[in-house]
Image 1: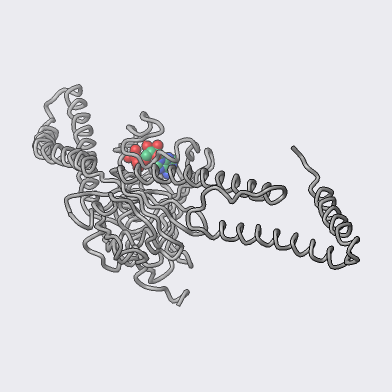
Image 2: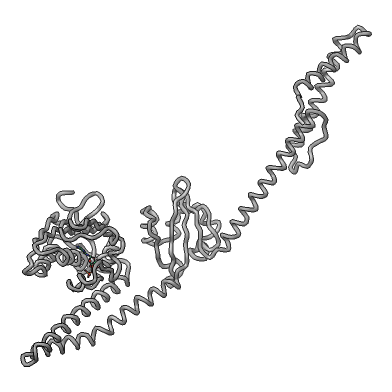
Amino acid sequence: MNINWRSRLATQLATVVAGCALAGWPFGHVGLAVALGLAVYLAVTLRHLLRLHAWLLSEAPGAPPEAEGLWGEVLDRLYRRQRHEQRQREELLAVIGRAQASTEALRDAIILVDRHGNLEWWNRAAETLLGLRQPQDLGQPITNLVRHPRFSDYFLGGDYGEPLELASPLNDDEYLHILVTRFGEGDRLLLVRDVTRLHQLEQMRKDFVANVSHELRTPLTVITGYLETLLDNADHATPRWRRALGQMQQQAGRMQHTIDDLLLLARLEATDYPADNRPVVLEPLLASILQDGRALSGAVGHRLSLECEPGLALLGSETELRSCFSNLVFNAVKYSPEGGEVRVRAWQDAEGAHVAVQDNGPGIDARHLPRLTERFYRLDASRASSTGGTGLGLAIVKHVLIRHRGGLDIHSVPGEGSCFTCDFQPEQIAQRTAASA
Ligand code: ADP
């Protein structure tokens, strides 16, 4: 019911004043009677106010004090609002309780980190997986507690596109998969999962490939050796047999290349960073690779050119870097037509060092680019077999770059050519060239 309290109060007040005036009139004390009446009215109002105040202050407020009229309505409405808010709070607490109980039950660790990189909250699994302790570690920088150079690089680097996989800080035999998501204003959520089992399976796969490759190597060396001897003494053999022997030798050579590449990949995957992290000066390395590229080009006659900032050197393994750059240069030669141009450039800038191998060959359709570094991925199997490729070249390039804190950028336009650029982080530069010093 919607009562007009303003007019009701006015009427009430007018009634008090008129009643008191009437009562005081016969005695000739109208003013005194009205003042007395208003004082009583004020006293009643103040009493209600004090009761309301006491009720609001009470620790566990129950039903509000009884009152009539406007005071009754005010108290009633306040009580109803309070009950509503209490119900909402209870519902919210129940939801939070359930969320907390479910995160506690999770086997994956969830960690909240504030914008300064300090720990804010974590579930129980974080204590088992990362050894965080409640409450000592609260507010501590996460990089002080998860002490691993790769974790610090990843967490502080801020590029969370790919998850990080690393050995557990508590147990070297356990492997963790870490995913960081940004939220709020610079806050971060870490999801850590135990992937030991998956890691073991992956390790078994790698070991299997490495073992099979290794086991095939010796018999293949024997076969190629005998084929060579047979071919050397094939003067009396019929042309048919000579052709067959030639093809056998060619295919055995391909198999040997594939096995060598598989073994190299297995070696690259076995450790995180190259053991021999020494300065490798790029100019002589690239010049000698170009020399090999010219030899591969042979009579076809590609034009190979090199532009390299003098003295530019990278930290890393010379053997691995040679294998990375020569795969790119040899691909450029293999896949560009006769007389094609191959340009190799090496330079550095604020973002780090770069080595680009550009050709004016057939180019690659954009749909192939994301899968190009997968093992055995080829655009055209027939073309690949004619070029003698193993399908592992770009996978090797990718792994060498990962181990040298670098990445591969492929830019290609069908019909115009391709440019494969290896980008290395500034920390990987061993020597600043005179130009940038
Ligand atoms: P392969 O041993 O077959 O050359 P790679 O991993 O080196 O294997 O290359 C994968 C595929 O990418 C090749 O089969 C080829 O189709 C394509 N490719 C690589 N480099 C080039 C290039 N410079 N121009 C055109 N296609 C290329």
